[in-house]
Length: 268
Image (cartoon, rainbow, N blue to C red; front, side, top):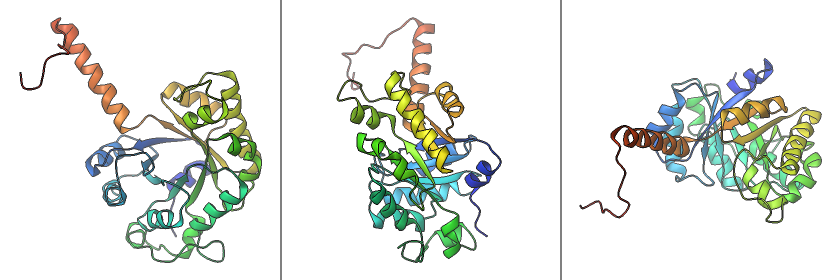
């Protein structure tokens, strides 16, 4: 029987902590996988990586107890199926705006008779012993709600058979629902946007499916759990690297009372 650790965690009533991978590096993926995350998502949509990098990153994560998820670039059957065949146990699909789009995405995730997925689990058959048609019940289809249209149709999307959860992209949701009033970013505080985010979680719960939110800080993610979110992403590899490097550099310059000359070249 195929095991999905994320589903096991949820069955115990516990929320999950998700990390984000946008750097083309199996080593970075391996490091992140060893830090205690419940899940890690490889970002094929906006990450600086391609399918080949994703495959190697999934392999690097295999030895550690973390559930691999992939955010695909778009609602396109080829890449959804290839990510699953590579061993992803969940797929986040961006820009789901209608129930028809949700149903189409869900069909890519499952073998017949539940869907239209083509059979050929190349790496998945080795990464997940026993992998076969029973994967229909193990993999997770997470539809992103990040536009005004998606928000307007969120009830119908959540009610679509085969959709296991809704995932909120706050940056695009801010851009798409505020008519330019709000900038993109994590951890929004605008009352109307926060109300929309809470509504998405409530709709998911009412339909008996899961809800995820992309966050920038542990504090905001913990607050989101109290709103009913089951999966919270806290930052990601590129942002964590930049923040840690900046903090280290700043501290050193404070201790040595030096500053970087912005006009100096690397050849000086």
